[in-house]
Length: 182
Image 1 (cartoon, rainbow, N blue to C red):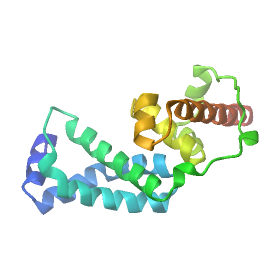
Image 2 (cartoon, helix red, strand yellow):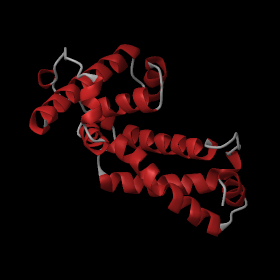
Image 3 (cartoon, rainbow, N blue to C red):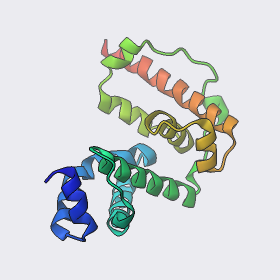
């Protein structure tokens, strides 16, 4: 079934279409939840909650061309993950500043490209929740610091600072991985 046809069947409440939608997109959407939570069990719970929300919200979905269904579903999952993080006050839990460098050397992009994507994603999962959330919103969702600040209830400077610290932590992990694996 094509994406548009699948979306239409889901809008009509077709359970077979729901099943196909789940089978087609669950892996990718679990990855989105995992990127935000860093915990597989929590990510699986959020995936379940997110699909329930999706199924209940299909009347709000508007087809805008190929890829619009996936984009809409990812946006819903990101919002479910952010709600979880806010509700559990995870974003206010921080890492002591002495454990995170203020300045860092950015690894060469050619170095980063040699690190397998699953290793990079594991490094992201290991970041403190605030750093990981800001990094995800900035890098993967393309949000500005102003938008991130609004979404998370923080100021723009905090967003920029958390992003810088996330990058610093990732740079260290990439360099260490490069030393061990080159």
